[in-house]
Image (cartoon, rainbow, N blue to C red; front, side):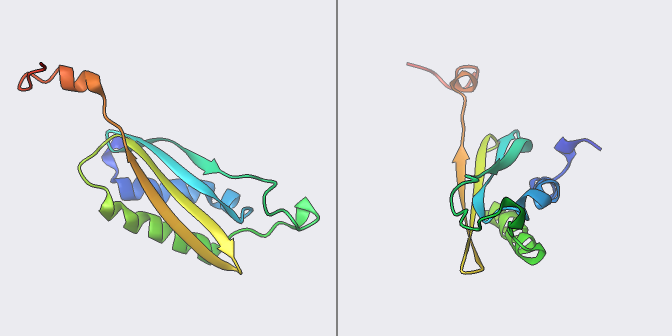
Amino acid sequence: MYIEQLSLARQLDLVFDEIQVELGNLTSGVVFLQIRNNTVGKFGVIHDPIEGNDRGSLGNIHGLTTQQIFSFKKMAIQSLKYKNHWTHGQISFEFALKNKNLATSFQFESNYNMANLMNKPQQKIL
């Protein structure tokens, strides 16, 4: 099976499975997906390892719990219902632990290519 054959929701599920260990060591950050033709290409986590590091020892880092990661993944997959009419862009999922509660938000960025407009025979460019 090819990645292009998987739904975007299933691809997102695979992304979260891949980054689960990293999320378990973070208290805040942004998970991002770069999408082309409704297929996840590049993905990862953006975080500042210094910010909020008042724990004293780097060996004592407690990030998201397994349950919080599950809830975060569920929110991310459910957010896809708000993605409409675009196939190229980026999705960002921000997360932060606040008083041991997980706060999340998401943002969609659609990308278009001017060259694609120029190649459409039905459109006339003035």
